[in-house]
Image (tube, rainbow, N blue to C red; front, side, top):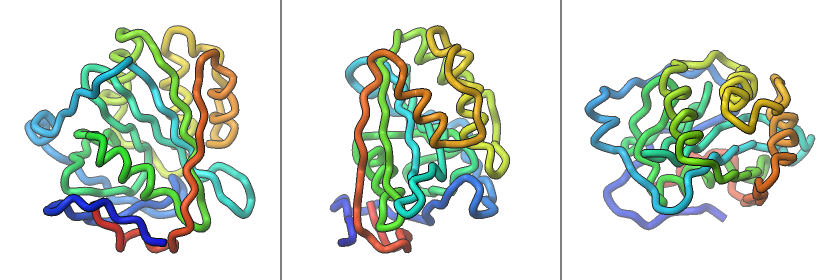
Length: 199
């Protein structure tokens, strides 16, 4: 099945692949565009680790991190999702409203990959520290998504014991061991060409 979010007037420019599969040309929005798109999500402050898992091998293929702090963003290191309504600066995607969050998750799920979604509630100051770290990080090189995400997470109080790794699956397993971390998976049977999807 092909998943479509019925929200008129929004268009997908391109889609994604894993952090080491495609050469990605970074797109850079202006600070004003990012500020205009900023979305403050209700509920507890949190960190959500996304791991894209190859359905054939069971291995992790890509890592991304959603941060719900003073605004909600997704750090998508060396990722290649691109959406008009989601300004990007230095691998940080802004304007993560509920429909855009849902689109991001589903744009990674298909017949060949599923998405592991792990969320940890954190203190507001920890979420804000994570936000500042990813905003200061800049663009990430190919195949470094898990390594850089792990390095950022390990700087946060309570997460210092996470494993340093280059492998998305290993980072996911380490995150899973954190007290209070939730776990769910998103499976879809869409075709690989997700560029046909709309928001």
